[in-house]
Each structure stands twice: as structure tokens, then as C-alpha cells.
Length: 329
Ligand SMILES: Cc1ncc(COP(=O)(O)O)c(C=O)c1O
Image (cartoon, rainbow, N blue to C red):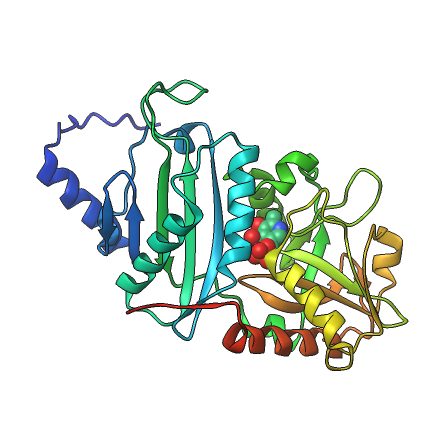
């Protein structure tokens, strides 16, 4: 192996900023605005969207996050996402950065600074900087960060033809860690990488009792042969805001959703594999049909009416429900 004998420079402030800019110019990103409680304000230059390395969110993974959508100049369902965020904070022993109203205000102001009418909002709470230990450093304030960005996008093919998923070989997270939206996503990352390496679109976690869990960053639901929408219980997987809302919408609009009922319960792998439709649900994917799971064809191998019906109901809800906060640009 060649040894790098270059003498490393000791950088001053200007050089650090210049290098951060070079990094970004090599790898363009769609990050439009970033709030940091540590900077006490908002930046719009991606090179300046930084945090101290010794924040425990970086080197110990002691942090939580959540993601909400900006749709047509409004923030969708922020209350549900914030409720889950604050629950995750409690479970992670992280102090809230402010009242719910203050947090909402920071998110809304950052969204306005982005000038964007469609995109994603991801926000994090960190344990804060001050040491390289495990427990929070003495005197550390929690860090609160908000990023307005383009959001994750998925191929059109997923919606027109359906996805192919595999049962992951990685173990599902223990319930406490699965219901907490912490920044420890190693199993989720490995599951997605494994699926792509094997030619699938994503993976599915199965729990130790042989019941279906969830996917990498989305929930999984099924439609039985009798037309019942079934969703795994939320006691050992993340309470997806999209799933919770879709379960409500499907109950209220059974005909439009093409379902005969809605049940939240354990779903065994055997039952799931025999289902008529399999769906992936989440803030970024919305509703997408799965047509193949391992070597098993789901239903007739084509996207079904429930996936289309639920997607329509969700998209309407995202544009015209009482769950919208207008962004004051
Ligand atoms: C592990 C996991 N499960 C499910 C979901 C779906 O949640 P939501 O509908 O709130 O996006 C997500 C996404 O946040 C996730 O990361």
C-alpha cells in the first residue's frame, strides 16, 4: 500500500470554509435552508450546514429525528410528526429544545427561508457537544437542527409496475429501539444495501415470532383475499404517521380505498405472502405496491386497486385537509 507522505496543512478559518465549499461543489446537494440552535440562525449555503464533531449525535448516535413534507406551500401533518419526535426525545433522555410552539415556529421559519413550495423537512435533536464520552457532556445544551431539502425520490416504475422486496437477513431492532426514531439506522441501512446488492428494491424485517415488521424507512401493509387492509401492530415497529393517517382514511372511505375493513394486528409471514396486495407506506414513498416478495408473486403480480385508492386518498389529504400549516414566505 502506498504511504501518503504529503505534509498535512494546518488550516485557518478561511481555508476550512473554502474546503467545505469545494466538497459541496464536487457533490451538489439539494439542501435549501438549515437552522441550527448552535449557530442561532438559518444558513442557505450548504457548505455552512455543519455541526461540531463532538456533538454526541455524531460519535455516539445519541440523537433523534423526524421528517415531514412540504406540499404546495404548506407543511403536512406536522403535529403528528412532532408528537412522535417529542416521544422519541423522552425515550432517548434528550431534553426538548423548547416548547412545541417554539419548535413549530423554528420549523415554519426555516421552511419560509427556503422559499420552496414542495420538498421535505427533516429535523434532529442532539445530545450536544462538549466531550467524547457516552453520557451528555456537562453543561451541554441539546442541539436542534432543521433541514429543508428536496426529499427522497423513488423511480416511477415502483408505482406503475410495483416493487420487489426480500426478507432481510438482518435482525429486526428490539422494540424500544424500533419505536424510537433515533439516528441509529444501521440495521435499516444494511437491509437496504443488502436488497440492492441482491437485485431487489428493498427489504422487510420479520420479528422473532415470524410476524411481519417493517421495511427500511417505511411501513408494510397487506390486503387479504377478502379485501381487509391489515397492518402490523405498532408495538415493535415505528408508528408511521402515514400509516396511521391512511388507516383512518381507509376506515372513513372504504369504497374509495377498495377495502372491506381495516385491522391492526400481528400479520404472520404465511398470511402476508398469501395476500392480495402488499403495500409500502411512508412520508417519502407515500403508497407503493409490492408485486414480488423473495420468490413469491403477490396477488396477480400487478399493482392493485387498494394501492391506487390509498395513494389518491393520501394525495388529496396532503393538499386539502385540516392538517396543513401555511408557510409564510
Ligand atoms: C423505520 C421506519 N418505519 C416506518 C417509517 C414511516 O413513517 P412515516 O410514515 O412517518 O414516514 C419510517 C419513516 O420515517 C421509518 O424510518
